[in-house]
Image 1 (cartoon, chains in turn orange, brown):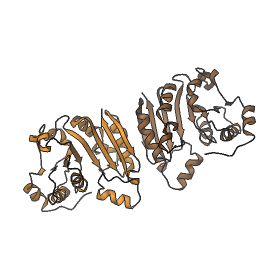
Image 2: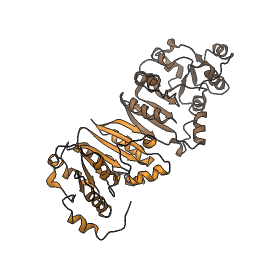
Image 3: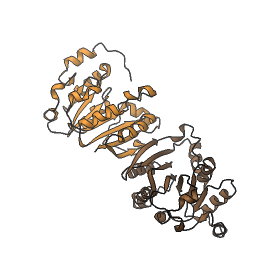
Image 4: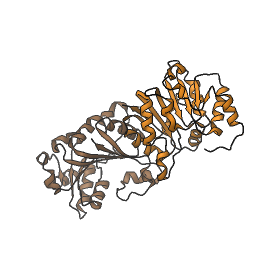
Length: 211
Length: 211
C-alpha cells in the first residue's frame, strides 16, 4: 500500500536511529546479544507495523525485527512502537534483498510474510517476497528447523508461494485455506486482514520448516 | 453419498462382470495389455461415475479404471458407461484398501481422488483416502513421476491431505485454492462439484508427483 510522502518521516527515523536501523551490517552474527538470547522473529514488509507491534507485545519471550523499505509507512510503525511499553523490537528501514548483509547463516528462528505485494504480472514474479531468490536467502539465515510463516488474502500469491517455497529445502508443516474460520488468539490480525475478514473472504496461511 | 439399496445392482454388475470386476488379481502386472499401452488413470471412489465416464470420453488416449465399493452407486457408473461409445474404461467394485492385490508396483500413471469422504471426526482419520496408509499404497503402484490429483470442496480434508501426502515422497506440483475461478475444459466437473460451484464455494485441488 503506497502512502503519501511524509515530510517528517526521514528526520523522525534519523532521530530514532537506535530502533530504526538503516543498514545494520555491524549486527551481523551479533543478533543474539541484541535479542538477549531470545528467539528472533523477522517480519519482512511490516508496512505500518500493525502485526509486529502487536505480536511483540503478545510474545515478550521473543525478539522481533521488522523490515520495511518504504519510509512513509515504517515511520508510523516505529512511532507506534515507541508509544508501547515493550522493548523487544527493532526496525530495519531498507530493502529486504540486502538481508544477507545484516544476518549471518542460522541467526533467525522465524520469518513472517504477511500480505506481501502479490506482483500479479508474470514479468514481476521475481519481485515477490516468496520467489526463489528471496527464499534461498531465507533458507540461509534461518536456523535448522527454522520456519517461514506466510499469510495472505491473495490466491495467486498463495498458490505460487507454496509451490515455490517447497522447492527449496522446506517441508510443509501446516496449511490453512481459511485460517480465520477458527479463533487464533496467538496470531495478530493485521489491519489489512481485518478488512478481508469483514468481507468474509478467506485468509490463507502456511508454515514451512527448513530442512 | 449413501444411496438407497437397489435390487438390480448386484445382478446387473454380475451380468457385466467383463467391465465391473470384483477382484481382478489376475490382472496384476498385466494392466498394460488391458490398457493397450496407454497411460492408466485410476479414480478411487467414483460414486456414480460422473467424473470417470466424462474423462474417459474426453481423453481416449488414456485408459481409465474406477474403484467404488458401494454397489448401489457403482451400478449407475457402469450403466452410464455402457451407454457411451468409448471402451477405455473398467470398474472395480470393491474396497480400495485391497489395491496392492490388483496392481503391481509402478503400474499406474495417475491417481484421482475426487470429493472423497472427509471423515471429519479425528478418530476416523485413517479412513480418509489421503491418510498415510492409503498414500503409501498409492506410492507403490504409481510409476516414477506418477501423480496424485486431489480435488475437494472440504477445507479440512484438503489441508490434511496436502500435509499428509507431502510427508511420503511426493512433491507438490500444483495447488489451487479456487480451481474453478478459471476455465479448465480438460477436467470434468462432477455433479457434486457443480453444486458447490453454483453456491460460489471454492474447489480446492492439488497435484502431487511421486519422487
